[in-house]
Length: 93
Figure: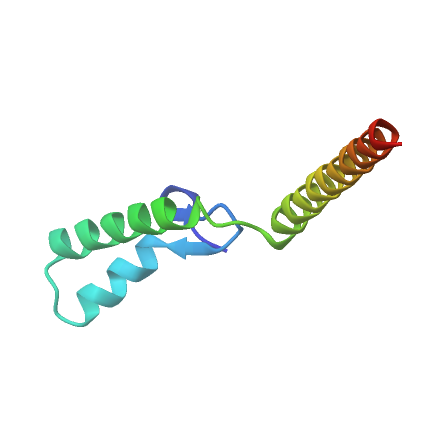
């Protein structure tokens, strides 16, 4: 899709052609050195901002993990409370 030497591929497969972008800037009247610098800076910004995005699959996995932990705690506390209640009732009887 892009010339490999002038193509930046964001982590999630989004292509960003720095060459094509800089050519558009040059065609709009931006000096060539500035156009290349802007294309390079934009590719860095995209890389930094998109590398920390969470995928839906990862989010679903983490939510399932949290649900499992919550269930463990609720069941554990319910058992502990029941044990404590039985102990108190036996002590009183």
